[in-house]
Length: 228
Image (tube, rainbow, N blue to C red; front, side, top):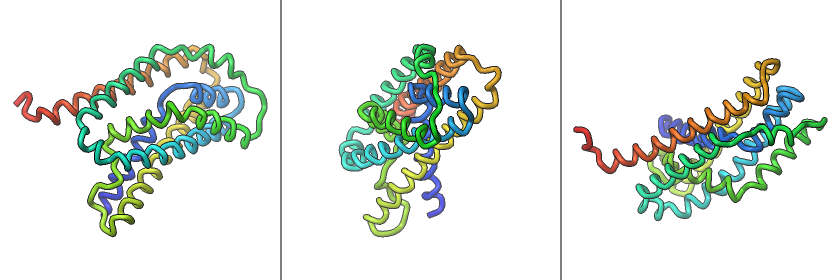
């Protein structure tokens, strides 16, 4: 049971990290707050994003579980589509210029609670885009609430797996945002807005590579004897 426990938790953590590394408006805002206020402000803002994403991950997992039979039936096609979607997102992120967004987000003074609540609300408001994005990573990392391996009644088994996925997701998202705020804070004096372009491009490349890997791994699943 221990290995299954760790595997489910790890997959959830991977989805949490992968779904968080997009350098969009909320990431720009977290970085801006870290630079203009403090590391603590950036971490609290990041946790607001992580909490909002976790709520949406719960909704995504609910729909994913309902559609499990169809997903398994068309698993190969869905993984290819998910890979293509992630590549497109990676290219989009790579091409984005975050500098105008930084100028719009010149920060005033807010309490930690206001930092958390404002970015939580901003993230939740984008649920139409975020939930499908999280669903894509569920497909990429082969997330399932109904896989075998953990002993117990079926209902308790699925509930436990779902709980582990969500705990892993939040842990991965929270770890990413905390790490980002700490790294940005270390280079506070040297950091310039133009460096956001580099962060954008690195994030875009990482996400694009993940999409390409998904497509290629699906291809080799279909044709396991290619190259032999």
